[in-house]
Structures are given as structure tokens and as C-alpha cells.
Length: 458
Image (cartoon, rainbow, N blue to C red; front, side, top):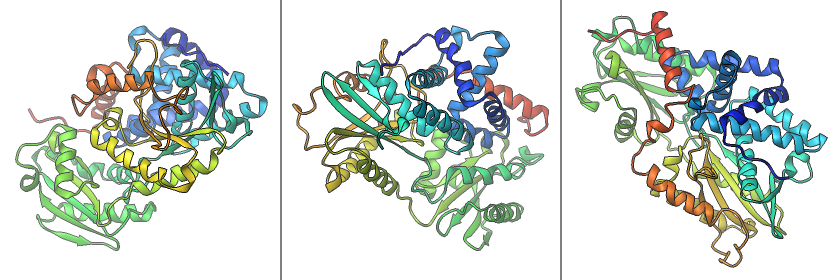
């Protein structure tokens, strides 16, 4: 099949009603309402929603805006809106080209995604590669949806046939402390983090040290939250021991200095220097002179194990008589981070270890990407920045006609100069998204009206 690739927001928005109809209007409205309510909650709750469910949130906002205004303005075009609308459009185009069994499978996966913690992320990588390959002149099939094979994508151009198996790596894979569980605790402690009259409070650090991993059980979270509330009113250097954790109250000035750190990236880097690279930290000291909560584990994270397990599982699903690729998507990396030299080197090491195993002889390359809105790299085609690690057993002649080279490599080279000049992406690329800056400002105003946030002292 060949899929059309539209870039005009006026054309893309016409796919929204058909996409929602594929899922079911009632099911979509229920999920969209829940996500929008969470996004209007505390700053920590909205962070989790925007981080893990940016695609659903963007589609929900765009659909509501379109219903109220009668259409989407070209001024609303952004990386997030274009990526979300292209995902919806590609799903509709794929649905129209699948057989009845494949159509039922696709719609079932979309409905199941609304109930899962991962959302559309596992399906996003398949749709991304199907649309991108089709835009570069490849004929594609989706065997896994049609239940004709166990791999996700099959492509062909000029007699060269290849297969792709897609794997999504959760942000919590290999972590002792899952981000969602951590922010659930922070959400429960919101009143403790930002208490009434907190502008006169003395900043302090609440350091939570786990013996191993953070349990997902509600009782475990309540035990940690209770210990934090208990120690807040105690003097500095107080320690409280729990069943699987220890809580300590430390001086903010002795660790972070007397001046509050307002930049989130700088604060995170400083916290990792002080308490370890795998710690999780949040603070309200920049605005409210409140508390900083840091959580760490005595056991180091191991991200390589789930990555290698995903690669080996993909190799077993791919046929050995065709050139095969494994596409891996990360949930916890931005595109700019994906292109950092040390991150690319780490990914190359994981791929080389995988290529050294017996099961990878038929794998041509491992392709790494990030679950984030697409950035415009080429004025004609858009392809998310990829880190492509080729199997050293494949020579240049063997690569002829295969994807993930030539044009894509040049796009990566052009994107490196844009994304590695700064540790953060430029605001101009994202600040026009309807669900980002303006949405958060309105949410802050609503919370202030409800009395959840204290204003800065004059």
C-alpha cells in the first residue's frame, strides 16, 4: 500500500472526525475529558499527563477547538499539532487499505490504547515508520495487523524487500523508581509542598532513600507520604526509618545554595550531581520557598537489560530469509537528547552487543527514535531524527536499496546542528501548540482562582 502524506493543517483536520469514529465517540470523549481534567490539576499531575499522553491530549484539544471554532487556523500549526494530526490521518488511511481482519485489529488496538498507561505510544512507532517509508517511495504492508506474520511492517522498492519489527521502550523500563509512581506520591503531597503561608517557610530538602525499588502498591505510597508529612515540621538532619525506605530532612542552602534555581534543567542536573544520576527530584523553592523532594534508590538502574531483551524478542519475530530491521522507540528521551554524542555512543554499544549474538545475523540495523512530536527537518519530507546502528557484518553494497540511509542520514546531519547547540529545544518550535504554553497559563490561573496556588509575595 502507498499512503498519502499531507502537511497542510487544513487538510489534516478533516481526518479528525473519521479517526474518532474509528475508536468510538463515547469512548474517546470519556478518555479526552479525563486527560484534560488531569492536565488542569496540580503542576506535577499535569507534567505526567503531558509527558506520557501528549498525543491524546493534543488530539483532544484540537478536536474541541475545531468543534467550537468551526476549523483550525494555520496559526495553530506546530510540531505537536502537526504530528498528532498526521498520526490520526495515517491511521484513517491505513484503515481504508486493510482487509476486514486488519481493520478490526487496528480499531481494537486504538480502543485498548485509551485504557492503557502507554497510550498511543506503541502504535505511534508503527504508524510513523509506515508513513515515512511510504513517503520515500516504498510499498508497505502491515502483516501483524492483518495477522499474516508476526512482524509489524514489510517494505519493498525495486525488488528489494525488507521487514521491520517495532518495539516501544517505556520510560520506566529498567528503573527502580517509576516516574508515574513518583509523581503520584508528589501529587498526594501537593499540600505539603505548597502549604498556606509557604512564602515565609524555610526551604528544605526531603531526601527519600529506598532500599531497592519503589513499590507500586497504594499502601507503600501512603507510607512514604505519611513519613514525609511527619518529618516536615521536624528540625534539619532529622531521619525517619520506614519498612523499605529512609526519609531525611536536609538544608536546601547547604546543597543548592541560597539563590533558588528557577531553570528546571539546571535544577535536575544539580540534583543528579548531589544525589546520583538516577534520582528523581521536584521543587517549589523557586516560587514559594517551599520544599524540595528527592527520591533515590540504593540499587542502580539498569536500562540496557530491557533494551537487549526487546531487541532479542524482535529478532525472534522477524524472518531470517529477508533483510530485517528493529525499530526501537524511547519514551523518556527528547530528539535533542537522542542526538547527544554520549547517548548515541551508548545506543551503539547496546546495538553492537546485540549484533554479537547468534540470533541477530539477519538483522541489518537497529533504528532508535523518540516518542515526541516531529520536528521539521526537511522542507519537503519530515522524518523524526533517528539513530541508525548498522550491523557491521553488512557491507555498503548490501545496503543498496534499503531504507534508513542516504536522504535520512543527511536529514540527521542537518538536524544535529539545530538540536545540539543547546540542551533544550528552541521555544519557537513548540510555543504555538494549543496544549502547551497557553494551555498551562490558563491552568495556572484556574488553580489560583481555586486557591490551590499562593501568589508570589510583593
